[in-house]
Length: 115
Image 1: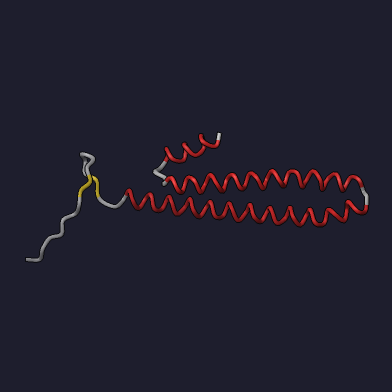
Image 2: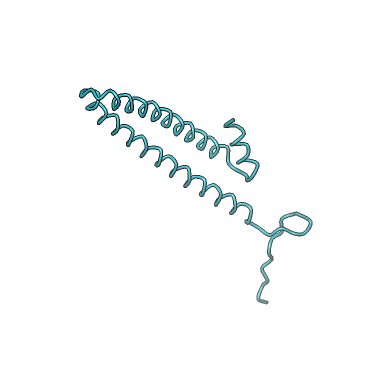
């Protein structure tokens, strides 16, 4: 499934393979953190329902860990967003590097001499 997402991005614009690897790596990290958060939330709920003082005290640390994980996800998405914006900017700069003639070949502007 991930390959479909990334090939769709690559087909929509020319994206460097390194950029694609970075996206994939960050998405995998995000998914792992979200999976961990799901387990933390389950444990927090079980501890809360048990009403055992020791479990409720443990929840303090678990909630801190959950909050830190959420911050990490936000940071990863921020990095992804910035990387994507930079890659799209670089891609559009590469496409507009010269003029294109009606026959599809690149053309270059001539500079007139002031003779």
